[in-house]
Structure formats: structure tokens, C-alpha cells
Image 1 (cartoon, one colour):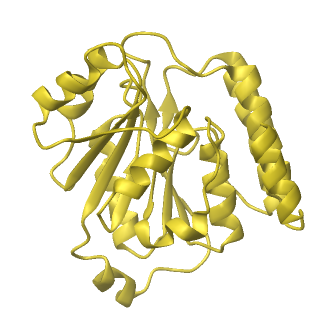
Image 2 (tube, helix red, strand yellow):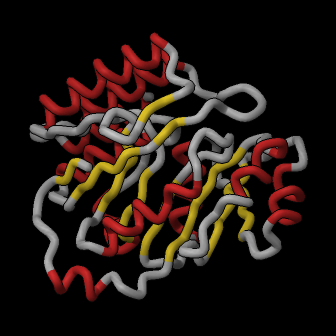
Image 3 (cartoon, helix red, strand yellow):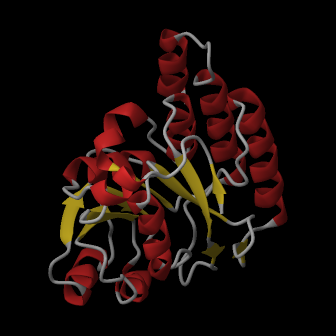
Length: 252
């Protein structure tokens, strides 16, 4: 595990002891994958929010069949970033966990994220590149792009992160305003991380194993989405004018 900023304190442990956990899952035509995901959700999760991007398959009925208590909402616009922001606003828990619906992330790892939130950290992100983590689905071009964007992030934000473009994260819901999310697409993952760095949140990285998508095709486009992430990194860097940063997001 790689940790940043303030150390753990006894008061932090006490504050997080009884925290409720909301799990936000954006989905678009994931009916064939959602059962595998839902059957592994651990007992520490109190609320599951499925944000549907206008699926044309049986994503919502399948989710309701697998988990009758699931809270299904339609996203307010288009894109993964919009879906996540919609879900975050619906969340009621003290902690919010975000993960994909395609089976590439295992819900069985969620307790590791919750553990670090319980022990004083504000933002916890999965890493495929620390001991215990890995990927069974990372193509050479995605790996190269992630590495280049990671170098840019660490230099621009004076950080020591080991992974960037991986959307298995958790955070304290009380810091949602500090995260100040506006991104519409896949670049929201980078936006969350750099805003957490800029806000001085206590960040931890935990090992995570990325699995192959169980069924269907990914909505990720490595080149175009990579460009959006890069624009986000430069627009949000320390010292960038707020108006310019917002203009970059709007034109992406």
C-alpha cells in the first residue's frame, strides 16, 4: 500500500467505526455481467446505486432480480463521468465506493478500501501496479498511455502515485464538494484524483487486480479518452486559471 499526507490517528479510527457505505455502479448494456458483480457485493455495503445510461438490454431488470434493494436511477446526461456524478448525488452513505459493472473489478476488494477510510484516509484508489495488484486485461497501448499520463500527473502535482486510469475508488462523501466534479467522460477518474491532490486529502492506494471484461465490448476509446485525460491534467494543474480549466472541460 502507498499512503500520502497525514498519518492515521486514533480519533480518525473512532470517527469511521460505524460508517455506512454506498456503492455506485454506472452501467450501459451490462445485463450479462451484472449478476456476477452483484453476487460478490460484501456485507459492508449498505446501499447499491445502479446508474443506467439508457440501456437497451435487460440491465435494470437483471439488477433488480439479483438485488431487489438496488436503487436504480437514470443518468441525467451522457458519459461515464455524468453517470458517476448522478450516482454520487444519490448516495446517502458516509463512504462512497465506485466501480465498473463489466466484471473487471471484484466487489470482494471493497473491504480493503473501507478499511483505509475507517483508519483516517479520505480518498482511496485501487492500483494495479503495487504489490498484490495486477491486470489481466491491460493492452500494450493502454499500459503505455497510462504510464505516460501517470508521469505527467506526478510531475504536475508533485505526487507519487502508481496508477491513474483505473476507476476503482472510494472516498468520504463529506468531501464530494472538494472533489468538485464536472467531467462527463472517462476523464472523471483523473479529475477526481487531481482534485483530491489539490485539496490536500489524505490519499491511500491499495492493490487491485483488474480482470478481463466478462462479456460485451468496452466503451473506452484509448486514444480519444487519453487525450481528454491529458487535457484535464493540464487544465486542472496548480496555477491554472479557473476560467481556463473550466473552458477546457467544456470543450473536451
